[in-house]
Length: 550
Image (cartoon, rainbow, N blue to C red; front, side, top):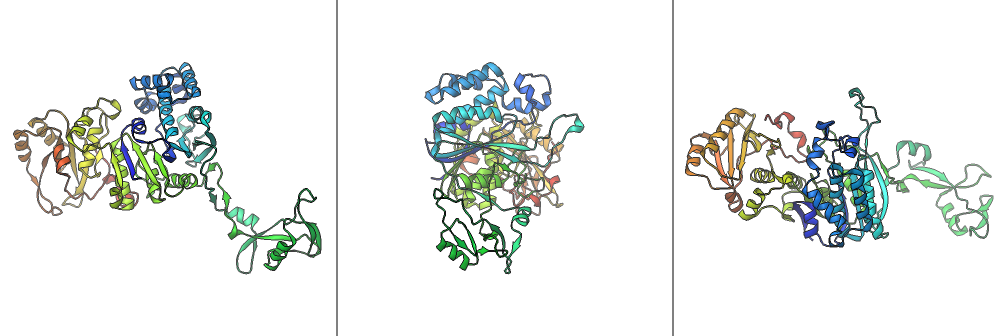
């Protein structure tokens, strides 16, 4: 199987492209606004704390998609839903009413049903969430997995920070410093590679306090066993002491020859010499406090708001899959699961609904594993011809209304621009990139994308924005062909020349989507200050050079 990255709605991708029982392990970290007031969600109060709740409402609102999803569940679309999951959502509809939280749970139910379908019988599923919704999500997962022979294995608690306090702002509560990871399997026969942690120094000093002449630490362990014929332990004398022993006399004599049996004083019960370096460590428990969060100055940090440490995915993948297995992340975000799977020699499938995430993943893969890795993956859902580009531009879905602009900006700049994600008036700026100027300071490039009718006035407006933003260059990218007057207006803006450029460049350049698709036209200005950075290069770029003054 070829590694695959899908750009699109994960429900559609799962249903149309992922085969039954083809995935060994699935991990998801679905979006949810942890800061949203819990009572406000539960009671569907829309007026209080609106600023805090806005991000959640923007993503999860009761709309046509929620109504359609609810109908699919209650009507048991294609017979996919268990009676328990149908009854659960029907009951929650009465309890929660049709609002943000129910929309979220309907969304998750639809997708978890598909994830269950694509898992192999030996497959495992991990859902990363927080205390705001973990109890609801566990009900959803129980209702899908358990009636069909699956099982709830663990709730893993990850300590994501050391302290959190906003008591100065008047909050009266314990600090929330943990996430939950719900762990389910499709059957009772699943892969599990036991993971061990190194002993802590305190543990070593307390329990392995003896040191050999050669420097090896050891402890003295019990050699005796329960007595009686029913127990089956042999009774004989060792070093003047008669007991029931754990080993046969022959094996005991061998241990004595090897120096593994110690009698600290004459007459005391002999004990077994157990070396620290022969021990695997402590079996992994369900509280993970040894994996630190990604700090602001960490080389791993990509600036993605919900980025999780690679160490979490490394652990999950190693425990619940083997080399060559298929790992799925249906909300792959900045690509942590994808990168962990790649370096651990797993095959992988990633899905995300935003092109910003797809762009970041492609850049991250290239920076981490070289350009060759991109030639080994299949990229799905990205426009490859004009028909697909027009379809993306004309999407009416509010969830993806800016996806056309994102795809254009990031594709044309080879994933080096940053997207203007502001809502409402964007001052004619869809993206910004930086390049090295003559004064050894980063110069700004403004990118503007138009999918509708274009005219010379658009170029004059872009020229005004360039002046206002003190930018050096402007790129106007159009779905439709430019008029002669537009080309003339752009040429009249003049040229830009830098000692870092091989040749001069028009201050305003007009590019068509057709040129991007058919001629592979891309920005040819050398960009020294990349906004979408790899983990390895993040510390090399100063934060002030990445800020957008827009």
